Image (cartoon, rainbow, N blue to C red; front, side, top):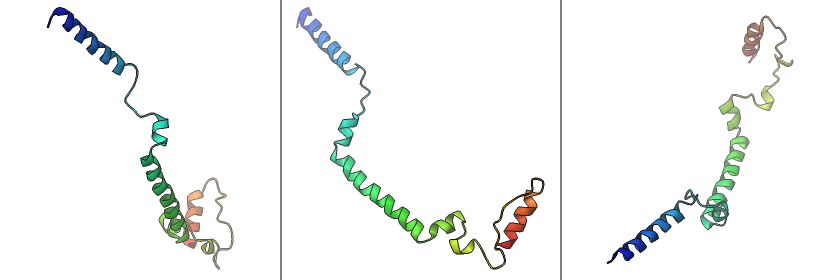
Length: 103
């Protein structure tokens, strides 16, 4: 190996380093991702399953229990037919206690 061969190898190494360091971060392009079969397999499973789980959460009335919301037939009872509005600026806690006792 002479000096010329070493210079040539060094030039090749420098060219490779410059090409790989030219602004690419190593992430896949968006077009590459959405044309991937793996992307669509994952989405074809997750999106419908999220829809089904959400529908079951609401249709089984589990949402009322989890969030503590009264069911539609519990908004107005025999003893309480008015809308529970807090109207007092100076005693809202007393009115809130009164409303919570009526539940």
